[in-house]
Structures are given as C-alpha cells and as structure tokens.
Amino acid sequence: MRLIRLLPLLLTVAGTAQAQNIDLPALMECRQSVSEFAALAPIAADPLKAVALGWRPLPQGNLFMNEYILNTPITVFGRSAEHIAMAGGTIVALFDMPDPRPLAKELDLEVGYDAPDKFMAGRELVSRDVIDAKSGEALIESVILSVSNVKSHPGKTLAGCTYSLDQPAEGEAPAAPAADALKPAG
Image 1 (cartoon, helix red, strand yellow):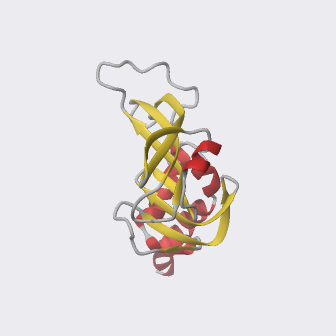
Image 2 (cartoon, one colour):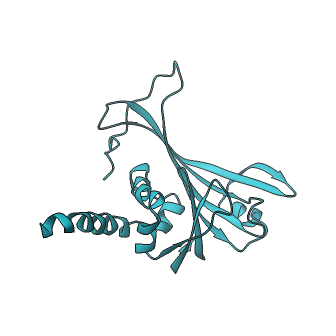
C-alpha cells in the first residue's frame, strides 16, 4: 500500500532528475537538438516541476511566453542571465539590453526586420532530414538562433533558439536521413 502512495512521488522525482540534466545555456545557444529540447515539455506544462529545478514562474507579461527567474544565474552568449522564457519550440534569455542590434551583430545574424521599436534577426544553424523512430515519418529538423525585442518587455533583448520538426513541403522529397535518426524523447 505504501508503494502505491509513493509511486507518484517517485515518478515526479525521476522526471525532475531527468530535467535537472538540461543544459539551459546549450539549449539557448543552439548547441542541442530537438530531442534535448523536448525534455523541457514537462517543465513548461507543470509549474511545480519548474520550481523543483529552482525556477520561479513569473506572471505572464506576454500571453505567448512562459517566463521564469532562475535561482542561480546562467551564462548565455557570454552574458549572465537569470530571466528566461519559453514559447512553443523556443527558449530565450532576457537581457537588460535596450538595443538588440549589437548582440545580433556579435552573433553574425541576418536582420529580418528592423524598425525603431521592433527588431528581429536570426540564422538557421541546422536543417537536416531525419526519420522519426516511432512513426518512420520523414521530417526536417531545424535549429534557428535569434535575437529580438518585444513590446511587452521594454528595455529587454531576447536571445535564444528555436527547435522544430516539420514535414517536408508538399511534393518535396526528403533527402537521405541523417545518420543519427531522431530518437524518441524520454
């Protein structure tokens, strides 16, 4: 009977242990893959898992982002960060930098939009064909580094990475899959 009561706790601890192996700077700097990014899904879905990792959930200042303050700052792009956010397949650090342009230039990003109150720059670092190990479906894995600003966070620069898996465009045949075919997460 006691084991049945402990099972949910053991599962939570096991999930937290896996999540504690997440390398946030590597994810934000696009040095990981979609598989590693997938480990964030349970954290984004459950604020208590974020708290267990030492992340303090913040009220949503932007409806599209889940934001956190880290108890221990991390170094991302050579800068200290304690404020992070996730939105879909994206994870970013928020820096106290009113102008994102110098960081975008430093990271050698292509400017996508530049106006006085809005800036976006990015560069695709990975685009490769993979085969989903579960379904056998051909997919394209993409990893994009970006720097931007957003009206909901004046004086902040958002810098991070977007990870995605997409189906090839209709009528487009995928190339030979990468040797390290996509492994199922978790």
